[in-house]
Image (cartoon, rainbow, N blue to C red):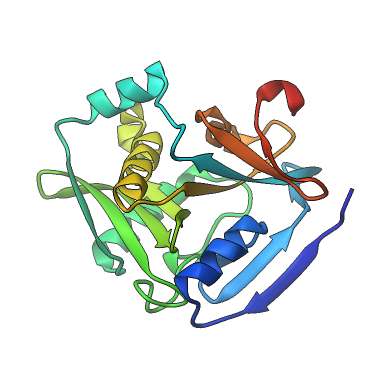
Length: 219
């Protein structure tokens, strides 16, 4: 097994560069880029697996179609990302869901100029009337997109807003003509990130062998 624990800083990257970085397992929070093959989670060491969805082959599952239908009454706005008091307040309500590695701020994940540093980033905001229920931040490359972070209203958990914003990100990525959508890291072992493994046309990066078709049997 290849052991990786690498990082660097970059304040400006081109779309094609982002595609290449994602394809090689890199992610970033703000200007800090990183990739690693092992991580501590829930008091144990887990194997990290970067994931991506092949947009040409993706089709939503029955449960995902229900999540889309459940939120038809909401308004979705996609625009250049910015942080304001409303999103910070939503983040503070959202963060109470975590018991390990509780994030301090949205700026843990986003730069002070999130729309353009280190790359173009847009937000997928979900509203019930004037009330913000969810915000998901999406990096744009040349042929791919990548999820950075998402927050949603905890009291609206029955709406499955996290899954809903991922599905809208996939739809938007297709509209842009992209080939891949990267939902981020998961672990080979069971974890709270297993919801990312439930998307069709999913691939994972084997650090030794390259990108492989994902199925639950080979995990």
